[in-house]
Image (cartoon, rainbow, N blue to C red):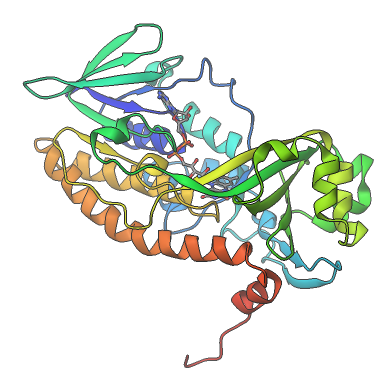
Length: 370
Ligand SMILES: Cc1cc2nc3c(=O)[nH]c(=O)nc-3n(C[C@H](O)[C@H](O)[C@H](O)COP(=O)(O)OP(=O)(O)OC[C@H]3O[C@@H](n4cnc5c(N)ncnc54)[C@H](O)[C@@H]3O)c2cc1C
């Protein structure tokens, strides 16, 4: 059986790795030109029941632990006056929680675990045509073609494969503006000390100023705003961002002042929480292609969990891949719905007029018995 995985992100690579471990070959078609073409990206916390579980199925727990940063779980939440509302310090050296790992390091770890020819680079899928007797013809940018019996769309938020299964499309939920401080420890030690080894969130009314420490010492700064009223083109210069925070404590706005280079604004999208499609033989979706979630810490974890679940089911039923896909889809729809609803609630709460109070309540220990 010829298996094509479109998209070599965390979902697609995890799927290819676990299939490979079970002796099942698959080809990953990735639009990027080489493995180093992508900007390194931010840091992710991997959850025991999803991302970490998938890495265990991939046989990569030890490699993960050698790259991950349990201390990256430390986080602080401040109000606009610079007062600390929450300061969570994890157990140092413990992998029991949700250790952080740089997205680039995680992707490298997965790529290194695959045979060199498992990923075909520079293949951007542009069209899919079903063959009358089953299977699909794939057409890539530049005219390359391939055929497969089983097609798995792991091609992210703007998936091309998705349209074979559903008309659902993502819609804008917020505007995110990103900046980077290259060497805060050397150039801005006060900022470095305030951010610490993990994450910081400054919670205002309908605006969040966040900072995240990466494994190489860089700090990624983010400004999140509601999509409505904040078109991305407004925020290509620092001055426009600083105007949003003119009544915030200078300790916090120092994050914007300290950043190197120009702000990079983008629209954040999500799909509706009730994603589901009628099963179609020979094709399915995983990760953001299946269920684009608001970015509150679940998307990559669930993409990897999808991959592991699908791979294990395909390996257990090699003679009946469609039964495996059908079972994967039903389990995935049931798992994702509450996660999508929770993610939508948390995302809305972060951008609410009372975000600081709401978030403190969210983190407060609940009385026992309730
Ligand atoms: C700002 C931000 C912060 C986030 N933070 C977190 C976090 O802390 N924790 C977490 O769990 N999740 C987080 N997420 C979500 C997470 O990034 C995604 O859910 C995750 O990357 C999904 O993995 P994927 O493999 O499905 O898709 P992707 O990672 O998007 O990979 C898709 C791959 O497909 C390729 N591709 C796309 N189209 C084509 C095509 N036509 N042909 C061939 N290849 C194609 C792309 O180049 C890419 O390599 C965050 C998201 C954002 C936006």
